[in-house]
Amino acid sequence: SQSERIDEIRKLRVALVVPRALVPATVKTALGEVTLQPAVYDPILEVLSDHRARSIEQLEAEVAAKGVEFLQVVQAVMLLTGLGAFGLAQSDSEIEAGRRTTRALNAMLTKRSHYSDQVATLASPVTGGGLTISRFDQLFLTAHNNGQKNSDQWADYAWSVIKGQGETLLRDGEALTTDEENLADLRGFAARFEEGVLPLIKALGMADAQTPHSRQKSR
Picture (cartoon, rainbow, N blue to C red):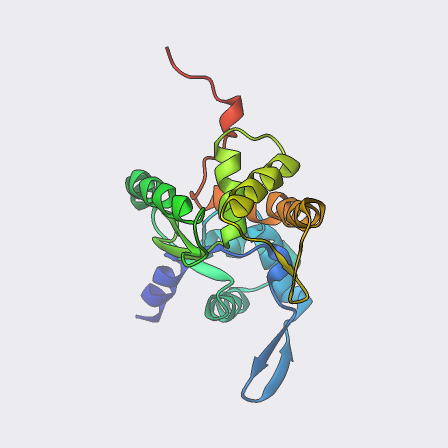
């Protein structure tokens, strides 16, 4: 019945799988460019900006006070999923069951980022699939996981890896020739990683929520 179908839709879980700032304000369609209605999309994106998985029912309840109705929530979820901004999330039990496997897989993949940019995907136990994470961001993540405390240190680590491979960064198509130039660009990238990408990959189970240097080993 229709009510049963609606109940099943409300059980679906979604998460924002890109930094909030990267969600476009307009979408190109066959009929032209369409502007996403701020009154509908802003409340939805605000709720999901922490990248935690929520059911459609939970999302509906959290945006109801802003006047966003069920059908508007469903339409927004469908559109943003089609754009790749939202991903369907697994159940909590499935997420927990997948954490060990995805952690091991991501450790292997981030090791490869030390040598090439051919693997730009890491696995998420939350979505049960892969998400695009650039080589630079994987290097920053490795430094973070190794206990480096801030974005400047992550940039220093990335440059040591890249320079050790005999590579340099490009700016406007031109190779950067000095350590200072390469580090300046990497520090900018690392700051953006800290602000936008790191919270995302923590929430999606691709990195531990607790910073490694603050953990205490059990005795």
